[in-house]
Amino acid sequence: MKQYIQNFKKFQPLLEELVARDIKIKYRRSVLGVLWTLLNPLLMMTVLSVVFSNLFKFDVENFPLFLLSGQVIFNFFSESTTNAMGAIIGNASLIRKIYVPKYLFVISRIFSSFINLMASFTALILVMVATRAELHWTVILVPIPLVLLVIFSMGIGLILSAITVKFRDIMYLYSVFTTVLMYLTPIIYPMSILPAWLTPIVKLNPITNILLMFRDVMMYNTIFDVKSIVIAVIEAGLALVIGLRVFYKAQDEFILNI
Image (cartoon, rainbow, N blue to C red; front, top):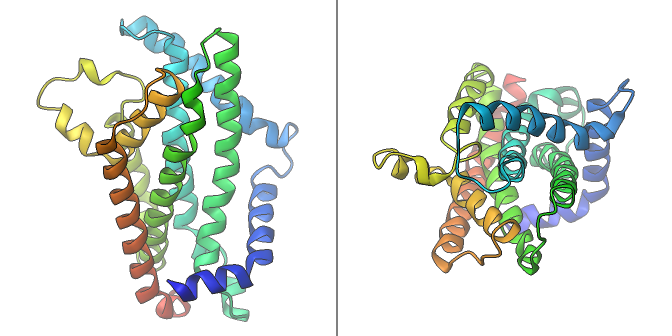
């Protein structure tokens, strides 16, 4: 771990360049550019709110805000881990030429997605203002679930990037997995409507706990309980440790498979 931290400090300028490059590539030749990171969640929220508020009669106050808060959390996880999955393959030419700590390519994808997360969070604040939702003092605790989400996503991203170098099919299978995971995350529905047999399954999803913590402090003026934060810390910590371990053991063979 100490070596990772030292390399991180040494190659920090490179990491900043990689993050900037990822952002530029994503919005290259786009008329609105980075503004899409703000407009996209708002447009999706509008469409989904119209569809689901008419199809299902959820007893949820301020459903657009409820929906967007779920999108902010899940979209970051999905986008960051999907981008991280191809980080090593996408930088194969650079990896072959010079020595660079390979995990920096994964971290750059997570950080560039985090910038999009901040834009989505801004969209969430705008929706709260537009719908005249009360902004509670508990919002100052928002960094806790967001940081845990970033750490968890980083761990999963490291695992996926290491496995994908050898097994490219993972890139196609993962999109199916994230679709299933989306429906097992209470993004468009409240936990209260779930049948008894499904509730424990949804709660096993690590994203669910982080999302509920996020909604507590953003929407409900409620401080998450100790149990929730302990579980989230353990899950995020385990994901990162396992991710670093898997990545470290696999990285020597990357050059043979890229």
